[in-house]
Length: 124
Image (tube, rainbow, N blue to C red; front, top):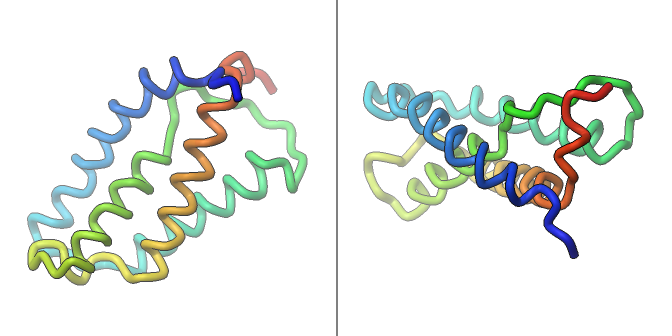
């Protein structure tokens, strides 16, 4: 298996992981427990990955090089796992089903990004 997208993943994922942490920090700091929003956000991204990125629905659309949601799914997954481990600071933010879907979403998107040639971006 060739990892055609490895260079792009190494460039883009760390930036989006930090952005995702910055977005999640106020929720954690101010104790906003909104698991339903994280659930629906995860479902939307998972549906997008399965339907569009894996070509179950064929739609001509421009691919954007810089936008990436897999790191956000990873952050949601990590927060959920830490909550399952009963670390008080993380309990109640993410439901078990959201952890499951976020993990699947991360794996699907990460695999696609690793194996996809970055020349597909910015083409419609």
